[in-house]
Length: 79
Image 1: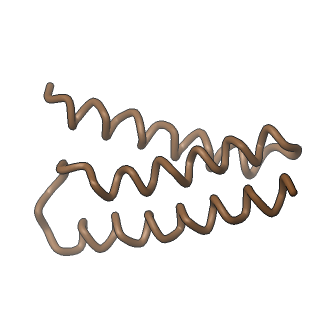
Image 2: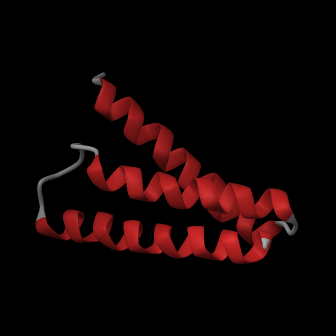
């Protein structure tokens, strides 16, 4: 397994955990986890893995934009 594949698995896992926690929890810890999940979505955009199909690249771009939204949501929740 390449390093990029391992990094993709890590950021995908962080996104899944962030989504579950953001739905199930409340408080400043949830905001921090949401921010981490958003950052993971942005990092996943730059990882060179997955199929080369155009729909997959668009999906990664949409996930990164949603990640920026998650980070903004986390900042607003903490402040």
